[in-house]
Length: 308
Length: 267
Image 1 (tube, chains in turn brown, yellow):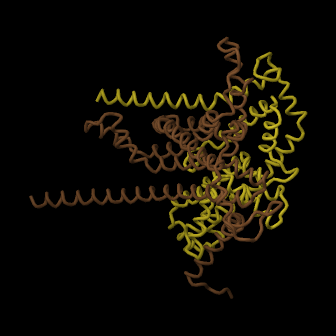
Image 2 (tube, rainbow over the protein chains, first blue to last red):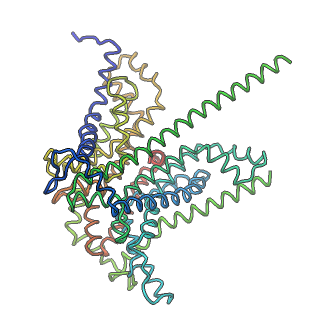
Image 3 (cartoon, each protein chain N blue to C red):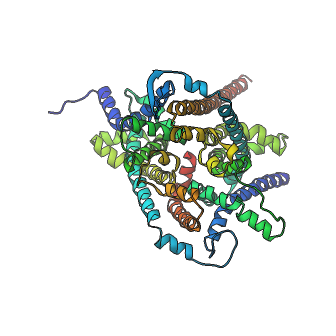
């Protein structure tokens, strides 16, 4: 006869049964590999690649080498500029999409280039910007220039292509949040005398904060860890932290240093993610508070009326 | 009333202009590439219309097609395993309390937000530490790992809308766990499962960075092949390939147009 489980036991067993496969998968192929990286970053470099089992902080010390520090600094400013551009461009786009009657079609238009292979998109930019590329050929044919302009293999090219690649990552979350926004609030603000810009900045932006922080994280983190864009359209002075990590693994074979850089990248990403989660929670909390305040107001209002 | 309509209209047209410009910006590079795929000569100087690069692409690029076969194989196998594992876990996490629940929730979120380079490097170091040879299998493992969080998230979001009393009703009527799962839960969350699966397929076909780290000799996927073509000389065959790939993407997006909003909400 089948043993009958107590509800609590049954719940535990079923929950484990459903979730264990994914839990094990992530432990084996995510948690353990990341732990190995953390471990390796504190070990000594092996003579022919790999590591020696001896505690050492030399990898972290090497990171302060001026040439690496420069790359770190460059990664930060390139990421900030590209992310800001993405957000500033994406905000009105998300707004227009949310207001439009043709949402599915517009989503279709945004998603097509977004789903097109990233290397193909980078390739498209190479064929536009390179010295024998589309833009230079066009300008020459028009007689505007005699010699090719150098439009590619510099930091500006990296920023333009990064914005191109990650713009949809900013547009999509902003669109979803603005789509849920109650536009009558804007009318209310206008009725109370706010200008259009004021009503957008003071009423809409605070209400779509979670979308803005999601858009920020989803563009900033991949841009910060970018590897292919600086490699393919950047010059000698456009390497970013992602390129260093790959070079340290595949060329120099300095695994501890690659691991240490990965730790930096991971930590910065995690700080961003927790900030996003925190601001999302705060917003939820605020909403609750507002709701409570509103209910309180209504209650006092009613009780006052009752007294009269 | 009238001034309202006017201001709304102007704000609408500013954002609308911006959106139109962005769409043009997003499409121009692709159009340029596609346009020159019909050029009879190499380079960006238009000569005459020709389908020569398409002919080369179809008949004279066996290694490209081998890479494409690898890509399809990896995309389907990794998406199927990620969809099954992720959907089941979402159900378990949503309705049951058990040990390790918060660990699984946290860990399922991380691969989605960490930079691809980190996932790639950590897997490469892991595989070499446990001495697994790099090849199709390691690519399959890596793709399943980065696909899982998306399925998990999309199915979880759908389960939030699921009415728990339906489940109780099914049990009260004598359905066992397997019947409840297959006949009650799965049918009602199938849109989320499908859009998760679709997301997996596109991301798997798209991925370059992670695959780059965990691929071995002979296991190259299409993005890796494109990479080697870009690095070692530009060829108009890529232009032709671009057009074919854009058409493929449009076809997928068109078939799943109902789910585009779910996809947007989770990407």
